[in-house]
Length: 445
Image 1 (cartoon, rainbow, N blue to C red):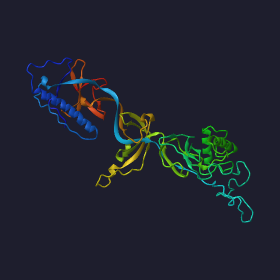
Image 2 (tube, one colour):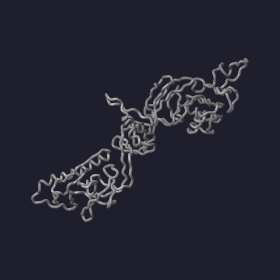
Image 3 (cartoon, rainbow, N blue to C red):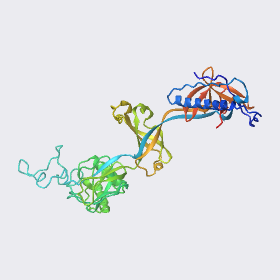
Image 4 (cartoon, rainbow, N blue to C red):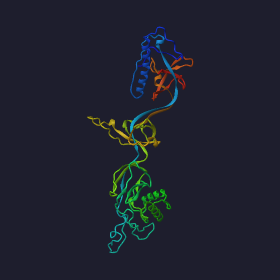
């Protein structure tokens, strides 16, 4: 129960009353106590709004007289209509989106072109040479002997017939886009192509249709080497485009594209770590990279997982006091056990789920990488409600809360209010006579 023994009286005179000739020294502690009581009430309400419980017993402690000793000066503030947003902050980390391990690919002869003497020229059971057979039962590409889209001979070994030597590597922090050199092999460039499927075979006129042909043609066209229809067929016009690309890359112009002639990644990347060394064999791990988009990762406690949903807007507090808007792009579904307290068994209360957030304006983050940030998730929101500062509230003797309305002539009246949502030092209020623009009293600072 929250109560006030004697309702306080307030002055709203623009000119302060002159002090009595003989000041009542006992009045000052009472006035200070009254201010402390209102502030204590505001603090208790803030605690209650955060999920705690609070009870405040207010007692005037005076004799109920209307002397100036029993008055408190107030400032007048308006009731405002505003949006209230309850944000819950969770720690996170700022970095780059996506993680990739890049390997050098330097295969041997084309998987579908057997070495001489083992396949196309190998005698069959009848003692006469015959075409090699593909796993599907048809003739392997290149064995039919005639050109065209249904089965031509592959060109001689391409530009990537075997392992070479690494002759160039990028630096940490370099950004690589489509067509940029990812590494150098034997003095030639191995560029970045965009796609989801790594190249796994040699491509040439007559090779069987496949998604890798479409991927090659998409990249050639994007780099300005057109003249063909993007599909899954490697035609003479595709070979002509490959030759033009090979010429600009400093390769032999064979019209054949080998699996190791380009590195395939979904998009542009930022080099995070270089693991290979110059002069080593061009096989195996080369470097580690990330995407170029900025991403915030948060390990959200499972008891707060309802705060995050894909597409939800958040506020990110960056180092240095800057803030940036963000959008939730992924919410994990598998919880990870939290770090146990030393000497205590693991607790499900500390389990978390991963949440990824993309910054609406990536440039806001500058070049920060791995920096700690705080993410404000919107727990609850109310739009266009009447609000007052929390310290405008008064606890009523009969129970509940009220505000002290200030009339145009300086008079006051007590209005009982019903409390709603709390956020950022303000509280939603409704009640008879409570309207937007109404002046209410708050303690002077």
